[in-house]
Image 1 (cartoon, rainbow, N blue to C red):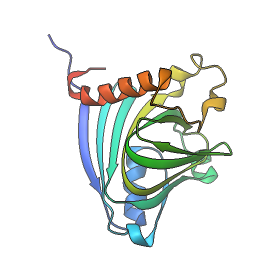
Image 2: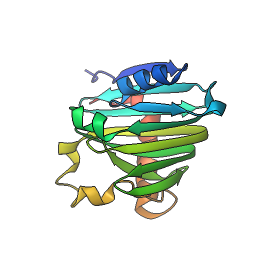
Image 3: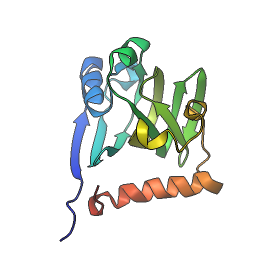
Length: 179
């Protein structure tokens, strides 16, 4: 007997900042959104694949100019206890967490902690794969996990390239994988 395929859902996000904040919060964690005037017609397509306590969430924006904010207030009230690994498939994105701000381009990766405040800035076309990993799956495997937050992992060479390739392949094969 073949294992059941992952739960897969697709949604389209548009509208004002409240609609974006509500939809993105349902996908990820509690978030605020600031939409730039030029980004008012933006749409975001989200595909979500669940594998037990892991999740792949692909977000594609075409075009987009907005910021997603996980404030101290939202983080402190939340029960979320996950890491998000971002793998940029197309475009670029700026992530800020733990007093670090980095810009990622295609194939780059970075880690964000849902228990801490962060900011994500988008300006243009963007396609990102987010891997939600429960804290207990990472801590113990990565010494000093706080030191890897918002650090650019170069996806064009070395271990970063291998990781980016593996994460991208997981998305392509998501319908064939099981928990």
